[in-house]
Length: 419
Ligand code: 7TS
Image 1 (cartoon, rainbow, N blue to C red):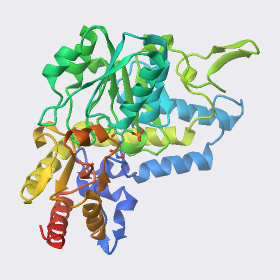
Image 2: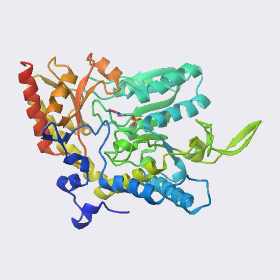
Image 3: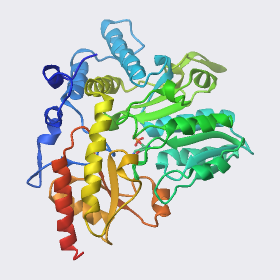
Image 4: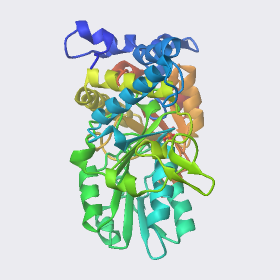
């Protein structure tokens, strides 16, 4: 394992100031102010180690993988497969064969819904998801239920923005074949009790599909200890490049599933009358893959490991608690979701009756990047009877000083709107 360059000299505990030096994009000024990037829930920034790993790959190693016998093709294949092994270790997967490269969380969840769903769902079966899902963990299930005749059900949330565990009890019947849920909400910040939810799904004979888009970048993840059947996550939210996602799955489930897409690399043999599939994980990887992106994600994993996922989770808890406290002092500002002790590093809010897009535009004038909108989670906004929220989110490079700037800019917005 390679430690990020800046931490080698500074022993074990990094400081945010040291981490920030690895992120060249954070050095810039926006509208005359230092950039405060508070939008990592949408996509994180990339350290120089990731940028350089991809640059080096293109300068020295690139060729197509699993094809030629020439030197570069073998070197590219080695880099690509070593990345898979590194990612498997990061989430404690038993084997790299259980790590499927996809484009993002969305594609990973679609793969499960279509491939597993088409083979296993039918009329009378039920699929359970929750009211706090991102659209990418709702729409694929809606589509597959339409195709197979299965029924889609939703676990409601409580007034605190947590899953209603009593309702879950009555919904989790033996008709449920799959329970798909997010480990962390991208709107409420709620951290769900993954192990308990997986165990409850298993108790009725259902499989558990975990959307880890917001948890894997921020919290330690052990797929074996948590016993999840599938886990989906995106590289671009965990310091890696865009265009790369992961699906982890239990081996017996992946082995039994038909391919998702057909094409080169995913077959063992093609005859005009039919084809036979390649072994795992290639059965699910049709066509030339995102090779440099796999190398980039592997460098991101090294970087996260170098800092330590426990340090990251602690840092985010501290900064979120601070932001929660400061934002709670702003009169007329309403925070959605549970208290800081039950949430990850993001806070969505509404400021009086000011449109969240206007709030975000005012913050942008001060160099503060936040997201406004429904964050691809409309059912949760319908639950609160609001069309949109403004969301500030935190990662390894954010500081309390940036939170102070956010709060100051919100006071400015209040003054502009006479609140
Ligand atoms: N699931 C959750 C919980 C997410 O937050 C997101 C992206 C996805 C799935 C989809 O990830 P993708 O990489 O396939 O797009 N969430 C957000 C967001 O909150 N703002 O922009 C993207």
